[in-house]
Image (tube, rainbow, N blue to C red):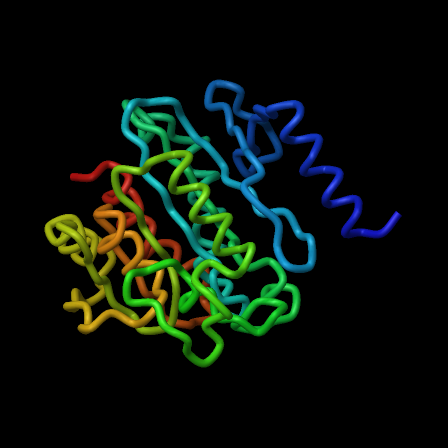
Length: 246
């Protein structure tokens, strides 16, 4: 059986079982007090599963997403480490549900490329009102299964706000009434707060969320750097501010 078939079978089993597994705290021990559910929301072009991870069960839902570009893994690393923190610090989940999609473009990550396996830039493929044909933007809005997976997650979980992590512009940008939250996040991590450029690029995720879905959205643009532990120390306070919304 090929690796892709095994991955697809795993995804089918996850859906069938409705898995609710505890996650590791990083010390090799599970934390059953904070269940970590995960649900299959789609498949990549090359049949790699795309999972949404669900932490907590409060009334308010927030979404963190990373890994749209396969050659920029830092956001994925940060989200995955934050998932471990959520397990270790259940107080962050009081009254809320945190949904994370740490890696939307697994094919690009496997290849080390910005685009997906069909050479489409997912950041130009979302079904925005201003979508138009562009270089690497796909044949039509949401033509790519990875894009469709995130659209499905937004429809399924209906987040009150969304945080996108990407790199390497080193700034914080707010969309759709998220200005005060973005300012507090910028103060927490030391990244400059910038105004989004207009008009929004065609098919951009933030434009889809904020303009088309009216969901307050913050984009945290990281800088590329090798000293990952220092980057985590710098950025994770901003992630806490986002989750708490205060």
